[in-house]
Length: 121
Image (cartoon, helix red, strand yellow):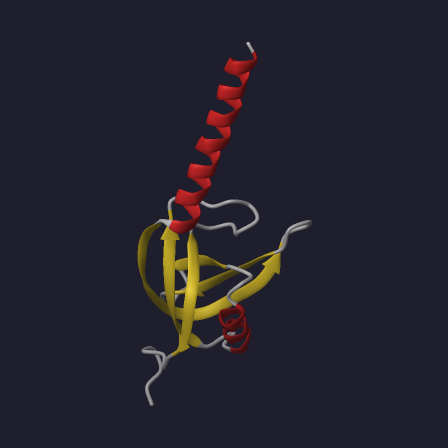
């Protein structure tokens, strides 16, 4: 009986570890999005995560929500600085997420300030 319980416990731990590694390290897709940075904040009661939104349309009908990992300090600094500006985001989409990483499956890895296509110079 002890052997069966040990096998079940070890199998469960192995499956959970593999699930975590796939979610954390295997990207589903990678890409770019551009838009006006309309929101960037930290949220959560016990575990704080960085969450943001960009508007990809003139009317604000297309909102792209994203998360930023705490380890990406340069991205966090730039997003705070570019609030309200037109930005280009590089992101990685994951299969899922965990509550301590962020609310969305989209994690921004790089941000650049751009000129808005809606404003003529």
